[in-house]
Image (cartoon, rainbow, N blue to C red):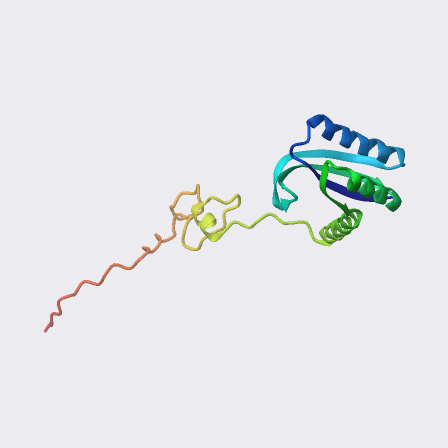
Length: 175
């Protein structure tokens, strides 16, 4: 069996009891013909894209069902002869569902072949500011949480970060 969507528009001035009876009648026919009704959705009164007859709006009703093609022809015939129905449209959606399932399987297969994502490496700025889990050693700077004193007692003090500007030295001659 194939999956179909039947969308039909009922006159806006039709009483709700008549609309309910039409939907019930369609459902009972479909189940009697061996079809399965998956969903009945009433969209309510909406404005039409263009004027049909003397109507500018209509009650939209969507029925999703699985049936054989002969059953769909009979449903369309019944909607065509009903005076309450302004327009109807039947769309076979099982082809779309098959295509969507096929794409999903291909996507899952590609995802299975792809290696697992690794943990993102901290940026240089995070490393310098100490925001990373494992801070990297930056040359010339102590690691966060360590004193800035030299490691060994006999080692020389670290050089200043920037050289001091040179002072002019007066030149004197010694005799």
